[in-house]
Length: 167
Image (cartoon, rainbow, N blue to C red; front, side, top):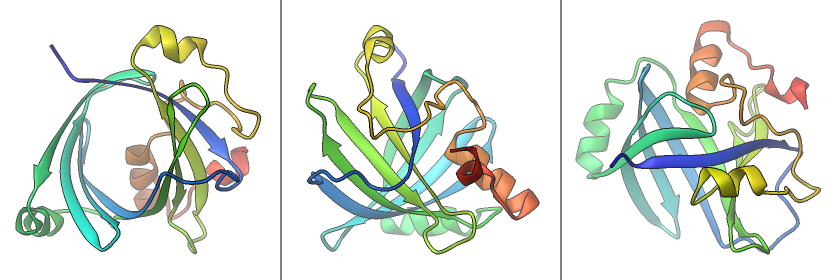
């Protein structure tokens, strides 16, 4: 059985005024955009973790497979990246319904900077039944241009990103 990622995505104005469960700084790069092949370094509490991720097509539901990497493997793959990495300030928060809200400030300090949030679900039915809290902005789940892979590709090709203007 395939590993499925079931998530909804939202544009937000900033980090919510909630107590974070986890804070991290991440850097991710795309070896390929179709299918998505991504590497990520996540730093939290002085500890770095490295992942290789494959993502299939889709919006609300898509195949996702992740594998741990060593620092050396990450460095070797990093050297193969065709474009600059995407940097994020990343925080997670508990929602009242037992779900976890993941929020990111993407490329802070750059003209393309923006905030977005994701909520992962155990099923498509749960995702469709979810009533977002008021602080979550526009639901962009079904817009395939609202992926980090697409962002990285457009940023490389055009030098800008219009997400912040779409709020």
